Amino acid sequence: QTFRSQGDKHMSSEDTDNLFGEERYLGKNVRVFIAKNSRLGARPVGITFVLTAANIPLSKYISIRDALLSINHVVVGYMINALNPPLRNHRTKAQNVRDVFDELATEMRGVDRFDIVGHSVGGKIALLVAALHNEDGALRNVLALDPVDQSPVEFTNQNKAKNLYLVPDADFTHNVLKRTNITMTYTDTGFFVKADHNGRAIHRNNSQNTKLINHRNAGHMCYCDAGGKISWGSVMKMADNGSEERNKKCKEEVICILKEKEKSKIGKGLKSAGKGMKGGLDDLKKDVDKVAKGGMVSMMAKSLMKF
Image (tube, rainbow, N blue to C red; front, side, top):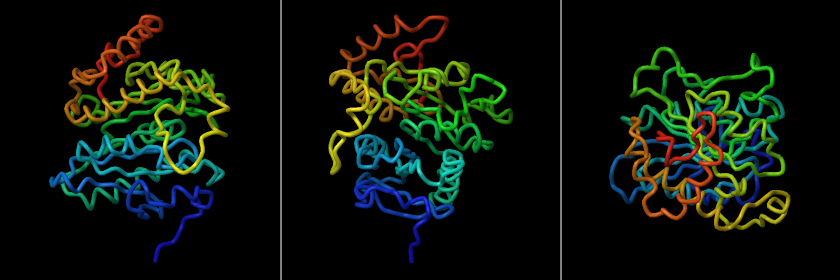
């Protein structure tokens, strides 16, 4: 018999439709949805978690899921309920991710590392996993899509003594096979996303150990799919949505990054990730020239991003 944890009470009806994958309860009774690409016929080569924006259903991340399935990853969808638990919500979710991976690793022979793609608060939680639950270097890649470090602030406090830092563990800093590659994007949009606590601010405090991609002028929700059973009206009208063309280009870039990551998993960069989207990269390069001051190079084309 399956029991629901208390954190599931506020989940949307759409997220119960199993659109993303098979429903399972792992770790400390954590509800996740797992997708596998059985048609490839080969043993999965990795595990990637997809962590949603606050209370956004997993059905809005099908494109990201499909990109990961195409490279033969098992995809673990975790809808981030920002309402429960009311205390230590983000840190609890980060611990849950690690617990779920530890259980899945016992089921999947030969897979001892995992990746995370997180959006908004899900991106912040992905960074918390890197900062708090990665002593053994099991976390290989983090792609934090427009992370929001708020409520509470963990990485971008004005008093830097209170901050967590994304510093590789001393035991495996020089071991390329245990290195954690952390890449973040920022859009500078979203009515609730403060510039002092967005991806660029997090990167500023961790510039030696993270990469930054400039997605300015795209909407905070540009990484989500437009389809689904619920209306985005109430959410999207409150935010700077970005232009349709810019949103499409930034989402396409993310899909390219995900599909290319198996080719660059030990840090060789994404030399071919831009193929097929030259026009989009031309726009992105223009943004680089505007913001790449003081050594901050924020785009995939110039940063040799390692996700």
